[in-house]
Image 1 (cartoon, helix red, strand yellow):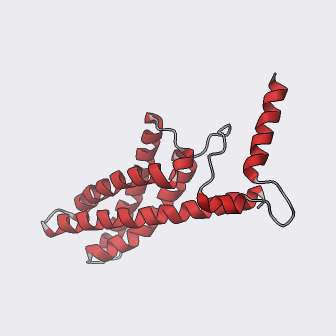
Image 2 (cartoon, one colour; image 1 turned 60 degrees about the vertical axis):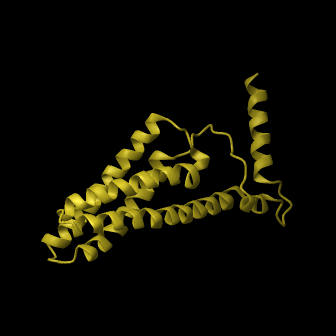
Length: 177
């Protein structure tokens, strides 16, 4: 498989993982949000509290599973994660506000159903490009089981991408000596 095909495969797999984590985060967020609304909290405050619980779940699962190849484990990374999620929270609060005040949707649930996809787009893009991005000089990570088959020699007889990356790194090191 060619390098750009492998990268597209990895991006798609990563996006799918992000969505699985997102479903779990959304469940956590919706449950906490609903409980907060039921006990009488204002929908905006309920959103902040529910979102905070979802964010905690998100950081844990995305850093360990979705974006594990790009992991840095730094305070800077966590700060960027919080910033992206604050922007995403702002988007969701804006959409909730607009649903209630501009479009006069009375249901907290339906407003939240509209706000969730808007914040999902902002959140994935920010996490992919800003929080869990790969360092340009980062060594390729070990392939997952699913990627091993994709990286094997293809019909054109190309060497696996992993081996090509290793050869390129060795050539670079030789020229630096």
